[in-house]
Amino acid sequence: MRAFARRAGGSKSVWGSLAVLVLFAVSACSTTPDRAVSDRQLRKLGESDQAVRARERAEERLRGVARAYADRTPLSLGLVVVHDVCVPGSGPGWFFQQKTDDYKVVCSMNITAYYGADPRHMGDTLDGILTAGDHDRSGPTGSGSPIPFTHDDHGKRLVAYYRGHGPNPQGPQAPEPTRLTVSGQTLTWDTTRGGGAPRQLVEEPYAGLVDDPPVSRVVRDPKTVTVAAIRKQYGLVFKLELPYSDYYGVLKNGRTRTE
Image (cartoon, rainbow, N blue to C red):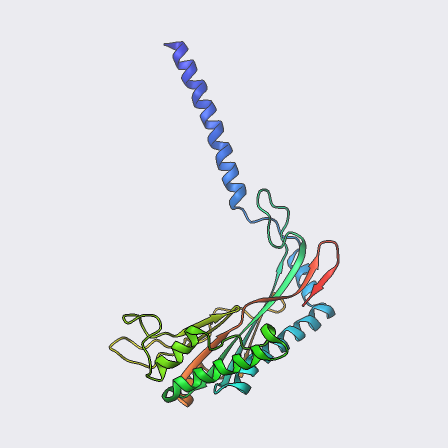
């Protein structure tokens, strides 16, 4: 009996050790790797002259895309929200390679633009957006043009639906379509048809973004304009979301990368 107790005790000790090892491994996998730089270093690198110049170029490029929709389509630009962040690179990870393992700091930016449109001419508005994309695609810059939406099969059926010439492209029982996504750009809009369902509206910009440059920079242009005000003026709101784009990085070997 005592021998069995000794064996049982030894087995329990082994399982206890294994449990500790498993917990240790899980902890290592779930713990965020150490930062490559301190907050002070992050701010210093994010405020450098090279970072500022790269930031200005990135913002101008993204704003140019937003302006292209206002210049080439029936949409009227009402509000632009810029979000710009600089994050520290990763410290030494144990098991998994991190995207920022080779960097001290990486800065990226995105823009969300809000436009007004006439809900009585939704089909013409969408057709104008797709036509601008068609022209851009056939131009000298091709796929690098700012407006990627075109009269592909879905685009044609979407325009026909809003003009009353065809069924809902998403199916007879599907809700009203309110989104197009191509090449990282996402275009959404207010619903225009009732059908008994509550109207789905483009929401106000997220209010939780922190403005603390260069770690997190938020710009609203114009500052006081709201989505509700755009809707009141035009009747309908479109929202264009451009994806985050890395525009500046400092490698751990001291070299820099810019957009």
